[in-house]
Length: 157
Image (cartoon, rainbow, N blue to C red; front, top):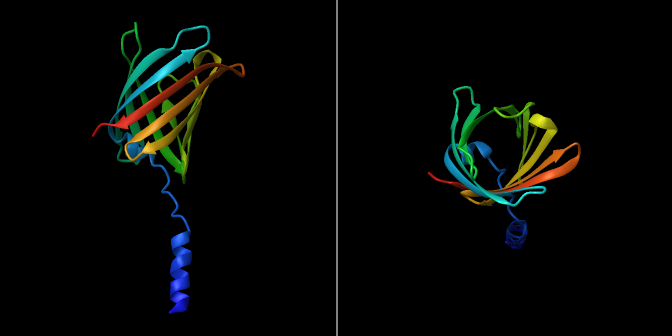
C-alpha cells in the first residue's frame, strides 16, 4: 500500500508533457489573422489575413491566404506543404523564391524561406490557446533585419 501511494505521488508530481503543436489542424478550415507590420523607415501598418486551408488526398496541406494591406487591393497567395519527415514539412509559397521549410516542435512551428529581392523570412508560430497562435516574423535583407510582423491568428470554425 505504501509503495502504491509513493508511486502515485511521484506520478502526480511529474508535469504532463504538452502535445506537439499541429499546424495542419490549426489551418484546416478558416482562420483570421490581425497583425502589425513594421518596415524600416516606414510607419507601422495593420495587416488583416484571411486563411482557408484543407488537407489534400496525399496528406499535403493547401492554404489560401488573402492579405489585406491598407491602401492596396487584397492579394491572394497559396501555401502547399507536405510532411517529409516527422515534424517537418516542405513545400511552396506562391510569392517565395525558394522552397519553404517548416519545423514543428512541442513549443510551436518555425517557417523559413527566401523571398524575392534577396529577402529572407523567418517566422515562429507559438500556440496561445487551443484556437489561437502568435506569429512572430523577421525579414532580413543581406543579413540586416528590415521588417518585423507580429500577428495573432484565430481559428474561425
